[in-house]
Image (cartoon, rainbow, N blue to C red; front, side):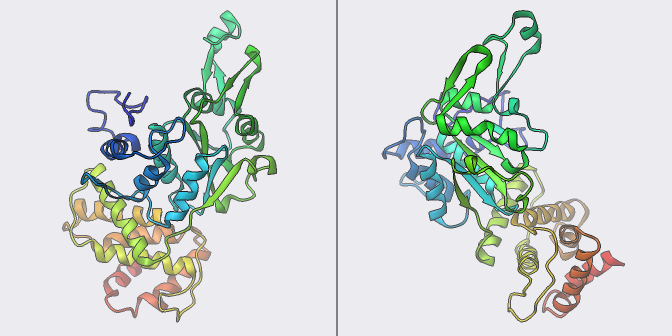
Length: 375
């Protein structure tokens, strides 16, 4: 198996041609292969790349052989270095932040670069069970033969320990507390007991866990102190500057446009800047010039939502407009993102329109488009 091959990939004659969203290790296989070929630094046991190369893969740059590695995360290098260094120790990694700060995106690319496989995933929900994490049973065989290895159905944690690979646990705090606690023994002892077979699975070198949690979900199912001690927490912040956020939105919109085969729409830069400006001002409760205080809506208005608004606007412009992204194409998406609570958010949005947008130079068309949606 190549350094970047995934057990879950290559399910058809052209695994990338028709797949809506390829796994990271498939989509960026050429970058991972180039990095592996040039990477002469020490690699932790079970890792496909050295920690230095993993950071380079996440942050991007040009390699000595001319390969351009696209940035997967735009932000502070030190945060990525801390996350990667954590995974090289015996501690698990918890990526914490408000929605839309690329926690899932970062966890996927870390797993792809370290293990060559980002598919060992547990999606945390209120209905997640211990079996989802660890293992379940083929009940037909269990009833016919009794407990046996053949009747056991391995879960992602079981398979990750067996292979020595990174396991991703999304939305950890949304899982019930008793399910969360099933990870304590795994993370502290690096073994998974299988009492039905009077045995255990010992983790192979390279195994670790990356979990994500939402800052705004505190109080849903708070982590026990025993489990939290097993994690090193890295908080992923929102983009620091407007230009940084615009760059992130532009890159992801371009990538999504290719993946979704959207027609190319020119002159999107002005509307991307407008969407990002609106979101940042309403998030902070202050205009860019810091002269006007604003009511803050209840929604997160994250970078991910800005990407969605622009992508939806491009689809409208391409299929129902004149092929150019205009204020009318993004207005509906912005209003839908801002007004989550019809009572509180509608007031905040109208005040923002009248106090800020109406008199801002060059925003007249956008103001009229938003006002038209209210009428």
